[in-house]
Length: 114
Image (cartoon, rainbow, N blue to C red; front, top):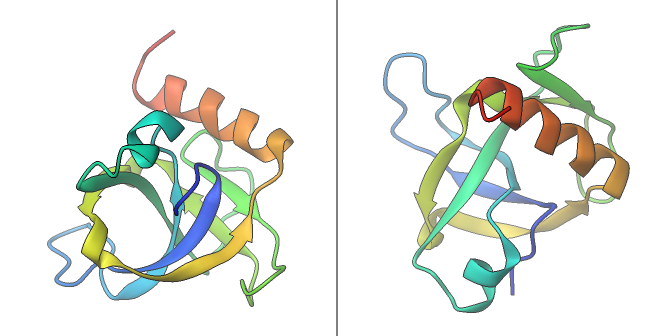
């Protein structure tokens, strides 16, 4: 079962315009309750290995570890819902509670939730 805070590999093809495409890691940010009832889609934040320093709240750094081979940036302005069939492998890594707190804060800023 998937859990909030896990990084999975997802097939995001085809990408359109500025959307990240290809198969890439994504962070699951959907609430655990929806994950547990096997909701057919999952809210995720894609990752990229094209790093940009000091770009919060649009980007946060995830350090390599587990099966995540490279340091990556979370693309918080690319939050999206994907069909669960797009999640192809995981979990690659489980984020720390500290990083999840930063993600929550960044998403509040990006979505203007106060």
